[in-house]
Every structure is written in structure tokens, then in C-alpha cells.
Length: 137
Image (cartoon, rainbow, N blue to C red; front, side, top):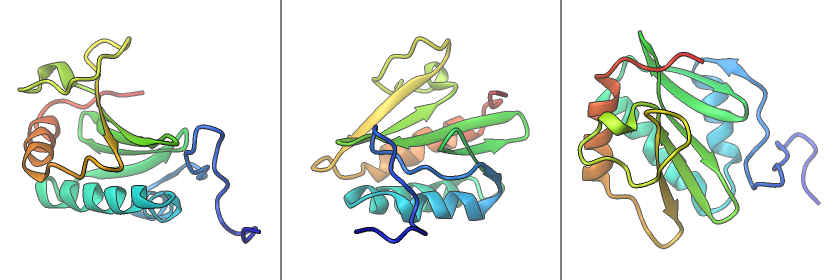
């Protein structure tokens, strides 16, 4: 039986975290990521910190968001079998993340348990994304 103070997982496998501004809600989300996904979340959060230390952070819609003065440039979301990364200006990145979106400009990248994290590619995408105007929503 789980501790009632632990965040509940939504049917998608994503932690249900109250919305909030700043690093604390993002860290609460990462701490609630199940299993191997938590390590991916910690590593991605650290990469954002290395690449763009002045990133604004928030959790909205049970999703950690990372932004710059223009808006949000990066987000992640847990599904049962993978972590989906969202680049809000992904069509402006080279190479473009492979996952298409119905939202104009947005591209996705999914990480599965056995994929690991391509630090060089992720660092490159985050550098590019943080240098572009973010998206407001």
C-alpha cells in the first residue's frame, strides 16, 4: 500500500503534482516519477541547469515546464512505458526531434527504459531551444 502523502499516478503513468512556480514543484514531480524514469528526470533537469541556469521552472497540467523570458521551451511527461519530451519550438531545432505534433512548431522525443539518454544530443537541443523565444500558454 502506498503512503497517502505520495503523489498519485494518473492512468497515463504520470505523477499528479499540484501546479506551482519555481524549482520546488519541479523537484516534487521528478521525485514522484516512477522507477527508471526518475533518473531520466533528474538528468534532464540537471542538463537544463547546465545549459541554461536562468531557466524559469513551473509545474502546470501535471507537467514540469522550463522557460526563458519569452515563454516555455521544454517540458517532460511520463507515460507508462516512456518519458515524452516536448520542445515547443522543435521545428526550429537542427536536427528536429523526430516526434511530430499537431501543435504548430512543437516536436517530441520519447525515451524508453532501454534507450538511455544521449547527453550530447539532448544538450544540443536544449542549447538551441533555450536560445529561441519560448511559447506562452
